[in-house]
Image (spheres, rainbow, N blue to C red):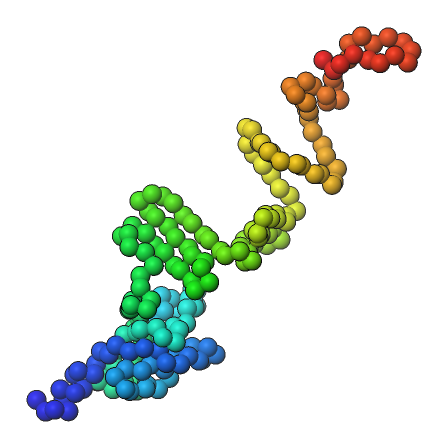
Length: 199
């Protein structure tokens, strides 16, 4: 085999570091052994008409290049590799974790059946379906919807409750005593005297 042939074979797979990114065109430049590549495409989990993923490699990220015919100008970024500066965010085989530079993370442990979605202070989590929105912020959870249905055998509120709109109930009790529209008072007599306690 010629030296050129050996060089081409040796250049089919390269490891490099992202040197520049172009967000608009979804392309990156990679530095590998002193070589700065052209603007290259990178693989993603899905890129079709029904499902598309977006996660742009960052400057400093270590990646693997696949170069057809050993030509880096035709290379595609195949994926990323952990490095000392950016190690694995978890060490347990049953954990799936996505970690962000601001401290936010998404994690599921299939062994412990635990799912965590954590956003740093000052951020927010918003769930939206049509006109219904559930938003979590520091110290506040806001549900906005045309109708809110709670179907539970028992509902407990431990703090102060404020109701600004109209309220309709079938039965109401205070300390176990009926004070609804059908409650009764004992000791009722004509005149201005006070009634007895609700029964």
